[in-house]
Image (cartoon, rainbow, N blue to C red; front, side, top):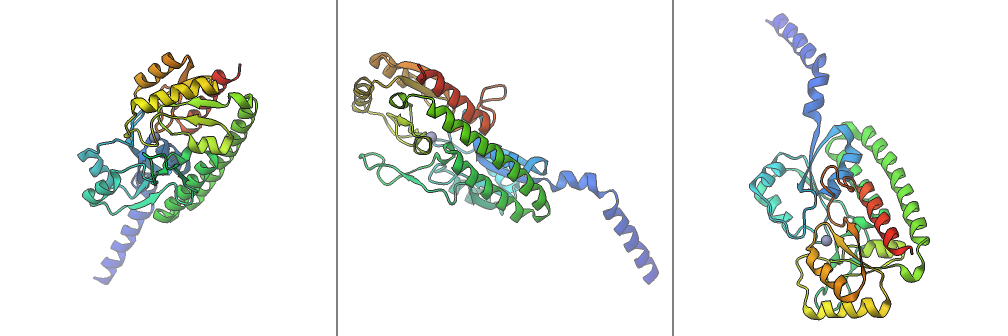
Length: 301
Ligand SMILES: [Zn+2]
């Protein structure tokens, strides 16, 4: 009997040892859910082939005002790691995590970022600005958080995650330098832009541009006739050259403002979500390049 057991255990060892690699590779893929497309792209860059990443809010989707589905709860339940932006961006995530019963680690991508507090102008009191990814130094903090979270849930992939993160961080450094030199080439008095919602505050602070938005940091805030009138006066008084549309907001408001103020309408900016496949902003790097190209086209006379 003992011999049979010994023989069996040898066979078991062989079975689990030898042909396991190909099969295990698929099973070993760490399932990660990110709340929105930009964050999902950062996870893909760090996780590479070792992770299977899904985004709850898809291309061109508005994460401020998202209504999760039962399929989203199922995805969370099957995930090993859930990445959220934090800073109040996904007001719906806490309830969804609870409802899903997931045992996944829930990690905040923006942890360690210095939050940009909104000025107390009456309607955004006490809110922090969630759009931290719009500054590349902040994106680097996200990447480090993602790397550390992946290592924690899957220590076997440590070397891969660290190598991927290092390679991607180098690309982010190059992007950061490119943004700085492009903005430097725009005359200082023309570095002013109107966007629909206040999504570029971190970009403004990092790179020295001025953004003015009729809508607050969330797309859910209401725009009053008084806000619109104020913006139009500001465009005229400060000679602001361009008004931009974002992929996640209603374009009618900005068309009206452009019409009444005489400012030119710039190209489409990607603020809170990537573009659909085949569009100009399918990755974080492409998104930042697209926006930079549009700023330059509108502001360099
Ligand atoms: Zn936003």
